[in-house]
Amino acid sequence: KAGVTQTPRYLIKTRGQQVTLSCSPISGHRSVSWYQQTPGQGLQFLFEYFSETQRNKGNFPGRFSGRQFSNSRSEMNVSTLELGDSALYLCASSLDRTPEAFFGQGTRLTVV
Amino acid sequence: ELKVEQNPLFLSMQEGKNYTIYCNYSTTSDRLYWYRQDPGKSLESLFVLLSNGAVKQEGRLMASLDTKARLSTLHITAAVHDLSATYFCAVADTNTGNQFYFGTGTSLTVIP
Image 1: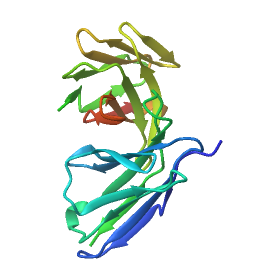
Image 2: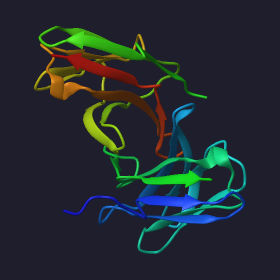
Image 3: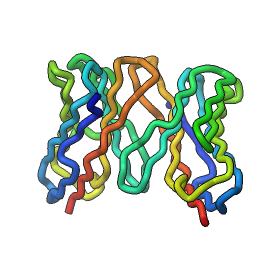
Image 4: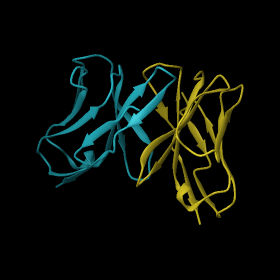
């Protein structure tokens, strides 16, 4: 079956711009989580959506937001981009609070 | 907040040697994960450990979990170059959703 699909794979944006990243989970999975990976901070949890509702949120500023659609696809948005937002953004999908979580290939965001 | 400590951060080992990566976590959790990440790539699931005393093996990798000590180990047997990658442990907090807390990662280089 198809895995977790993230688009786009690479993005270059300018400071002050905004960006939207997309994640399509595995069919049937209703939980989608987002993580930011940077060399300095490692892998940090951004937020989790389940059945179109944000269920949990990490310690990130309000510039980071997300949503989930009825088909479980999720988007995350970062407004007013800063250089420090440059990172690999990963999403993970799972059925719910089940053991297995599958990660997408990630979106590499570079802010210049 | 749940904290996950992983050591060593960097590991350089010769082919054919054995070594262990350690993962300590701060509070009770019933799920411990090991992931592998190749440069520029996403996270590949290696093991999911769900109970005290759980041991899983795949090829030259074996993972174990001691929930009382809040310790998991990833043992590498007779390392080969193909095992060179970064290995992460993660603990899931399922009380509020499906949030993962990741260790800092261990960058493993196997030298021929």
